[in-house]
Amino acid sequence: MVFSVISPNHPVELYLGRSYFKKDSTTKIPYPEARVFICGQDSVWHELTMPSADHSIYTVAGNLMKIEKGSTYYLRIELTDKTLHAQTTVPVDGATIAEASCIVSANTTPSNGYQSGSLSVKINLPQNKEYGYYLSAFSKVIAVAGAFSNGNYQNYEFLLPDDVSSFTLNLITMDPFYNKFQTSETVNSGQFFDSDFITIITSTFGGVLPSYSNIENGVGLFGSFITDSRQVLVNTQLK
Image (cartoon, rainbow, N blue to C red; front, side, top):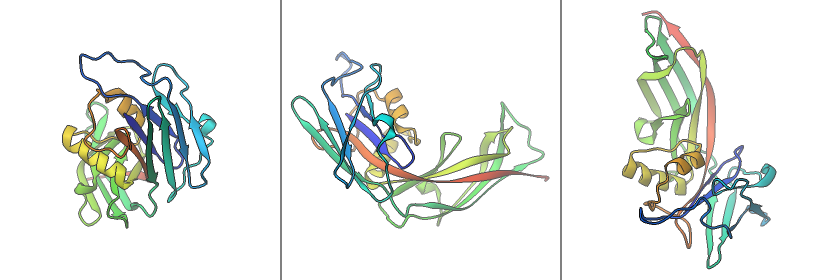
C-alpha cells in the first residue's frame, strides 16, 4: 500500500503500509527491508529515509529534492520479492483564483466561536480537463469542482472564526491520477482529503484496498498537485 502526493514547496513524503483483514496482526513497519527512491527528469535518484520507527513514512533528507510544475517524477520501491513502480507529472496551467470576497453582516451573532458569512469565488478553470480541483480554507475542503458553475462559486453560509479579519483561500489542482483516486475515495467514503495527504492517510487507513491505484506491482497512489492561494479580507457590512 503506497500513498504519496508531491507538490512544489512541500516536503516529499511517502507512506508504505499493507492491506490486511481484521484477523491479521499489524506492525508499524511492515516492510523494514524496503528501499524507496524518487527521481525527476534528470534521472538522479533520491533515496527516501524513514526518520521514525513509529510510522512507516519516508522522506527526502533535508528536503534536498525540488518539485517543479510540469515535471515528471518516477517512484521505485525495492522489496525483498518485488519492485514497485509509478510516475506522476506535476500539473501546470492549473486552476487559479480570479476573484474572491467574503462579507459578514454586522448584525450576525457569533456561535461557538464561529460566524456565518457570504463567500464568493471566481476561478479560471484548468486547461487540462483531466485535472481535478477544489477549494480549501482553515484546513478544510469547502468546495469541489462540481460545486462551481462556469467557474463561479457562492456560499451564503460560509463558517469562519469570529476573530479573523482575513484568511488564506487555497485552490488545489490535482493531477489526473490524484483526481481519479480522490473521486473514487469520495464516492465510496464521502471523505475528501485536504493537502495534508499523509496525515489523513495514516490516521484513517484501516487496511482496506483503495478503489483506484496507479502503482505497478502494488496498490495505492503516487500523484501530485499544485496550489494557488489568495488572502481574502473579511468585510463587515450593515444590513
